[in-house]
Length: 211
Image 1 (cartoon, one colour):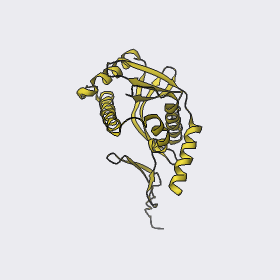
Image 2 (tube, one colour; image 1 turned 180 degrees about the horizontal axis):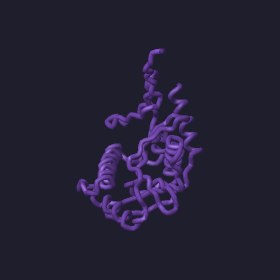
Image 3 (cartoon, rainbow, N blue to C red; image 1 turned 90 degrees about the vertical axis):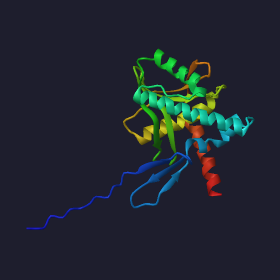
Image 4 (cartoon, rainbow, N blue to C red; image 1 turned 30 degrees about the vertical axis):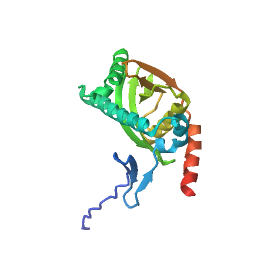
């Protein structure tokens, strides 16, 4: 009788790795060299610079740090149901809680959802994905005082297309921005996604990398 041979199948499923300190996304595939993927934020840098160019770097860094800590508190609340929030984030967190209280039929199915687009090779982290009576809703959480609806449309267009390409079973019905403020209030913006403009930014980003 022929001998039985155990064949170890190569794991060809790519892994998306994230290094938080440097905010680096890496695509790892067995048998291939790692690929550093640009983030949606990196690709949108020309638009971000246009929107926030008049704001000092110190102010932007402080706001980014506060936003990161707020997102972490929201993620913990959704996963474990307890409040653990820094004092300077408390008002923004209260705005999020008020939103949740007024949308009880919205169920969070993902928080801090990392993805990559397998064709265009960019990566990102979506804040919130909800299952609602009207379909799956992608929500980005913002703490900015001013609304930048057009720029947010570019970001959410990239997120929606990336998530749907990453997970064929996940179809986004609508995209929204939850803008929370320090006084505990919130505005839920309906956002029209603009993937075509994001692709223009990606083309510029790739041109810069090549040159």
